[in-house]
Image 1: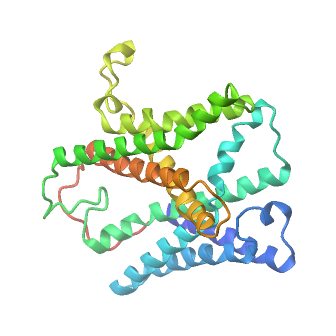
Image 2: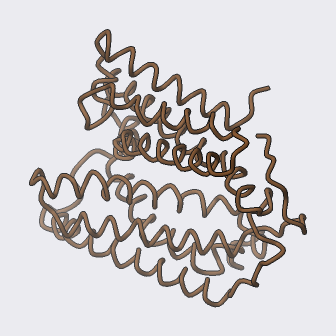
Amino acid sequence: MIPRAGAYALCSVLYGTAHLFWAATGPPEFARIESVIEAVWIGAIPALLAAAGYTMLRSGRRMVRWAALGVTWLGCAGMAAYCLLLWPTLAQLLTVPFGEPMSGAELGAVGLRLLGTASAAGLAYAVRPHFRALRGACLTCGRLHATAIPADAARIQRWGLAGAYFAVGCCTIRMIPAVRGWIAAGGIEGPAGFVLFVALLVLAGTLLPLALAHSWGRVWPRWLGPLAGRRVPRWLVLGPGVMMSVGLSVYFGIGGLTALLLGLTGGAVEIIAYIGWGLGLAVASASYARRTRPRCRTAEPMGTNVRI
């Protein structure tokens, strides 16, 4: 049976090999529009780098394993950056059921970006036990049980509140010009899918960060009847928080700022607001993750021999 990290590394190899093959023989249309970078072969570099780093994690030398871990994560970050167009096209998919068609090439590009991003995120996540082992930490939770200092719950909560309300503020800054335009135009112009996208975007800038920071994001409030008092599934809140924070930070932090610096777009305030929104969600999500992290059943730190 292939280990989980090995499966993600294999997907990275297949992704990189396909890009090299297309670079040599001529890429299909969906591969040509996959990234903002026109040279298809560039997509192979971070994918094969991540896979190569993973293979070196089996080394018996500690420094080699540290270097391999860094190479793996660097390759994963490069794959995510290469596939950064995934985020706006996921939003575009919302309009398809409402009559806004996407071509076969566009759908193929979405699938290719999804494969690259999923391989990168999965591999980066799956090699965590190696990082924990190198630190001498618990392989289950990552804590240093022998030297752990009790977490300051109040401080973690304050950071979560600060990040959440910063995200709400940045969302407000971004939406004010849009709302003015909609008022002037007499409503939101566009298909029903776009209206749905705007509604979800507003919820991601208001309800989501507040749920990450307040108690009703961990325990269902009393007015929800049968659900009242029950714990909210952790990833029901944390999953969208992580996804939105990564999407906004990566897409606008890399693509938006690059386009802005090259003079390819305007709207500096909106781009900076999106980046701040993503960073605020990242802080709120980290706080939520710390506050809802389950207790570890392992009381002793684990060794350094890892088999995943």
